[in-house]
Length: 363
Image (cartoon, rainbow, N blue to C red; front, side):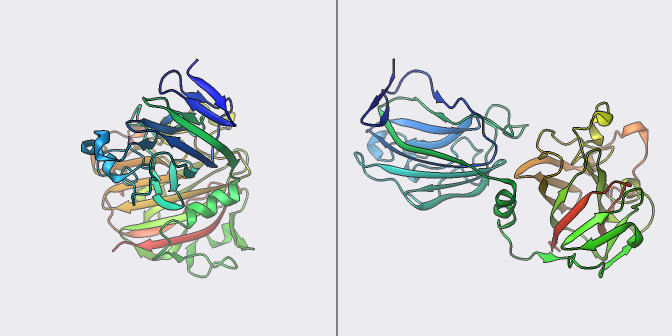
């Protein structure tokens, strides 16, 4: 009763249920226009989470004390000081004029343009309902009702395919990254070089072979970016600060698991064995891998004793290994406090593929 359609415009009187899409979306581009009135407060929920903020940005609106003076378009429910909470510029048009919003969301990474001005630049959207968890991998778009009439029109949504999604993520803050795999051969790598192939831009672990392949260079603090493709039952790992010998999960700082979480054979693992986990030490959030056979994008940040793993635009692990005192099977991890080492791939006899492998040193 609070929603109506007038002249091809969706109209809400400021009350009632949020208007919610029947379909859920993963990675997408959303474009719409809105027009509101003095004192109004509304927003756009993404994947069912609040929100791209829309409000009265005038002093008379009475909300300057909570950020309205900075403008609409920000991810207002992000934590204070977090990227994206406040819009980069004030881009609102005067009351009575239509505002155009464009949103791109890949995982939790969110870009927002208001009236063709970038107001949120690839910020992580936080989960307002449980800040210990990322926002869901899929969810609906919702138009909020929160006091004051608001009108919407020209609402369009385009789903973003894997290749485009990975390209958007790879393009975020590219400065300082250097490719460590040339796409043709294993120059710059050592260890199990006979267990891998290099051709057409892809580094692949050989089936029924593998072993730890690692960079000749060593790194202290760094960020690594790469794409990987899992076969069914696929299993590999990222060797972090690997000393050059031994099992990367124990002799190195850690092995960040690369695993087909969906395979029935892995249904009953210890949570610390699933994809993105610091193997045997800290469990990663699950549900954010793309289907088997598709390329996934992953970014790993290593600073001191801390690890952050971002998978397909969503942070699935954020931990400090110096705080870990309990281990899977009570197995010691003598390498977890290493401050430097090689970057590599653990290999586990599965034909997992990698490409676009780049590292930025933070030292």
